[in-house]
Length: 113
Length: 115
View 1 (tube, rainbow over the protein chains, first blue to last red):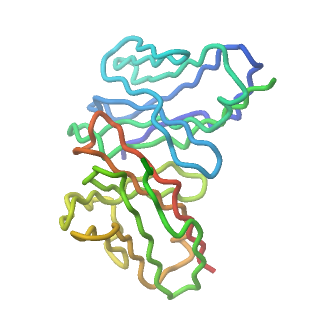
View 2: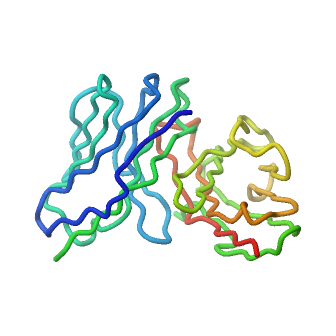
């Protein structure tokens, strides 16, 4: 059973702080990893994807991947109240099909003004 | 450019009735995916369709569930003889090509409640 585990939270950080979201996955064959943001009652929205070990930065967001530890993280710098949402970690299928994603249950992030 | 459109957003059915959920992909997208989110669970892949073809239905329950994406019109997820365990949020996603770089664009979901 392929699994993606996330701490459900809620994770609460003050405005301007760094929010750190973590995720582990069980399928060692997974090659691609994704972070989605989902506001309550809204659609999941892709924030970042990462395929290679190391860090990938995009604006205030940094995704980190460590395949040896089967660990993915998302850092949000200078957190804003508008970042308050549920963050979903997902792993692509080990067969390389990026449509069959395995999602974690999500981490609820609250950024306090 | 409209996003992925799903309707109805909310649907209430009694046990034994049928539920039909519709999904119109983003303009220019020919690949459609259905995911289900049960209460307190993560999104789970159900089925992948292109126009008139089911490409991968490995996540679909064997009975009562079917999906189609006709040449004209939206994709439809059909659940026959619904049971309480079918209560969930059903999300549709679309992409320009198979999975793209993971850029599945999701709709806002259809929330099915079975009484």
